[in-house]
Amino acid sequence: MSLDNFFYLICLYATILIAFGLIYIILDLNGHVVLIDETSYGGINFLDRLASGFYFSAVTLFSLGYGDVIPVGLGRMVAMVEALIGYVIPTAFVARVVFNIDNKNDQ
Image (cartoon, rainbow, N blue to C red):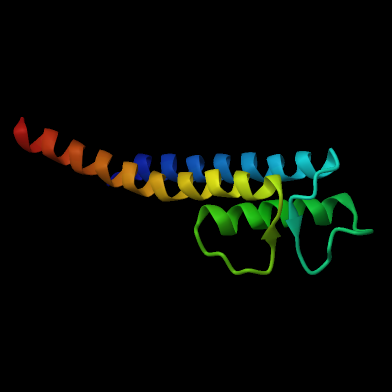
């Protein structure tokens, strides 16, 4: 595994985390309740909502699932897609590294 591959993986995770965090926030701003946490989103400012969206995105992407923020409604479907991506990325990365090692050994 090279440093370039590691940097690529970090950038990929960061991009997906930010994208899904923004999806949760955009849905919330459009009136869809997608996340429920201890603050219940009532009367909190935008930055707190943004932080909750990114936090939930990270917890879902890395399959930690603490349970302090719960997806509801449309948020469940979005969280399922994000969790699936979070499971597939490491598998694809390992397969790519193994494939590259096999190609180098064949040459």
